[in-house]
Amino acid sequence: MASLLNHPVSRDQAKVMNRFDITKRLVDLLHQDEAVIGGIGYTNFDLWAASSGPNGRRQQNFYMLGSMGLAVPIALGVALAQPVRKVFALEGDGSILMQLGSLSTVAARAQKNLCVVIMDNGAYQITGGQMTMTGQGADVVGIARASGLAQSAWAADEEAFAELIRLALKEDGPWLIGCRIDAGKPVDTTERDPSRIRDNFMRGLGVKG
Amino acid sequence: MPEQSWHEIVRNVLKRHNVSLVTYVPDNVLRPLIDGVHADPFFTAFACTREEEALGINAGAWMGGTRGILLMQTSGFATLPNVLASLSVPFQIPTLMMVSERGTLGEFNIGQSLVARTMRPVLDALAIEHHTMTRLDEAQFIVDRSITQAVATRAPVCFILSPLLTGGKVFAK
Image 1: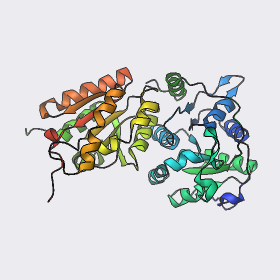
Image 2: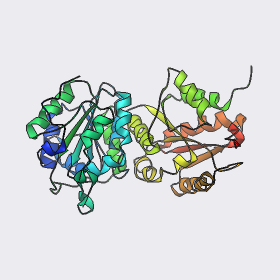
Image 3: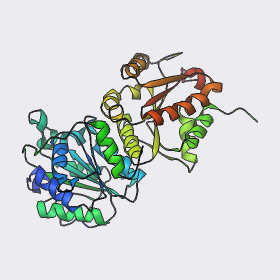
Image 4: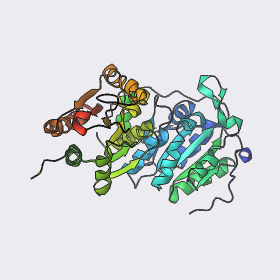
């Protein structure tokens, strides 16, 4: 197991970063074939925005359009089906609080090729910024550790975030990386065309359903 | 040769259709099927903390090329309308569901009998194919044909296991 001793275990010790900026950093660190599952809300929109490049949009992304809380389960399913591929789940704090049991399921499966990234701004941003429980004392990384995900840490800053992503790409998981983010507006809005999203994603994974 | 039980029939049809992932929230009536898939190395089977979670796992697995089925009881199905309507149906994911039917034919828990009445209206409202399985001699045909249809039409299907087939759960005094 990789050592995370140089990374903070408490939310208070993490720098507040920009959602689009760290999503872009994540996408830039990917080697191209990793699968990324975007939860709902601004996490999803910024994944869409950060995945657009000169050669088109990266195909191995799945964008939920509802089903709040299911980014981690969907990512776990992809990881089970394709154990050689690294799979990332991008989820907001409000969303993961709805499906905390999924963290213990990931831990119980000891899913090596899975990394969960939590974007935590302590608010339900898209509905008007109402406070979530992470802004009132709940610590998602602490919950993850207590759920059995030993390789869980807060990203202290952008550099530490990149280091954790590199670690997750290289070494066995499951991983959980907590990111404190700001309340910035997303850069773009995901196109809401579910059958196209699904078809693109499956083709990106080399599957035709 | 002795007649096969419903759960042996289901297990064999799942294998024939390469449905290798079985996620579930446990139920007493489903126990022989759950035990059977755990005992068979063909299957990856595990319990999930919620039915929604299990549905998400199966959806991801299907997009990654692995077929799965979700086993649950009636009250568990009642937690699913949002994810069926926002994930399985619009994304055209052939979510396979098997529900052991509570709330009818001798139910002793009023909560179960009330929640059971929401199941078929929800399935009908979402135009999801569903079959109530009551007879052993029809079990194979229903499951076999419906999995073929679900995959071919990229649509969910729900198998409702009636107490007429399984014996159901009986009132323990």
